[in-house]
Length: 174
Image (cartoon, rainbow, N blue to C red):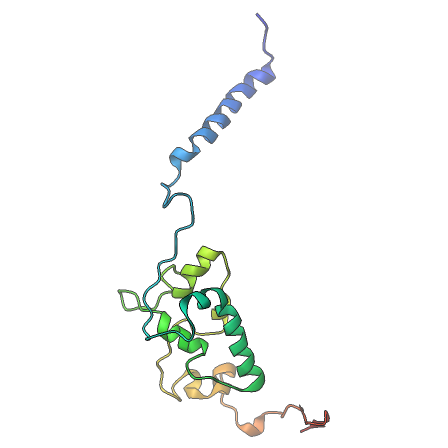
C-alpha cells in the first residue's frame, strides 16, 4: 500500500469540509420566495380617477415624461397642473396601516416596488418629498422663508448680492 505524505493527510479533511460546506449550502439558505424569479411588484390602487396617460404608456415612458416636465418647469417656467412630481406622489403613495408614510426604500413605497423589480435606482427623492406635504403656506421650514430654511438665519433682500443676468442681446445686466 502506498504511503500518503503529511501534506496530503492534512489536505484531505480540509477538502472534504469544503465539499460538504458547498453541498450543504442550499439546505441552510432561506426558502425561495417564488420560482426563482424576482417577485412581481404589488401596487396599491391610485387615489385619482385616472392618470395623465394610460397605464401601459406610463410604465414604459414615465421617466421621459418626468424629465420633459422638469425641463418645462425649470428652463421655461411652465407648470402644468396635475403633472408635477408632487401630484404623482399625492395620488400614488399611500400611508401604511400604522398611519405612517412608507420609506422610499420600502417595498410598500409605490415607486420602489416597480423599480426593485426592474433593477432601476430611484434618485428622484434625493430632492423631492417622498410623501404629500400638508403644511399650510408660510409654515414650512423657516416659517415659509426659503432663505431661513437654507441658511438657518433670516436675511433681508438687501443682504443678498444680485446675480448678473444676461439680457436678450447677450449682454450682462445687474
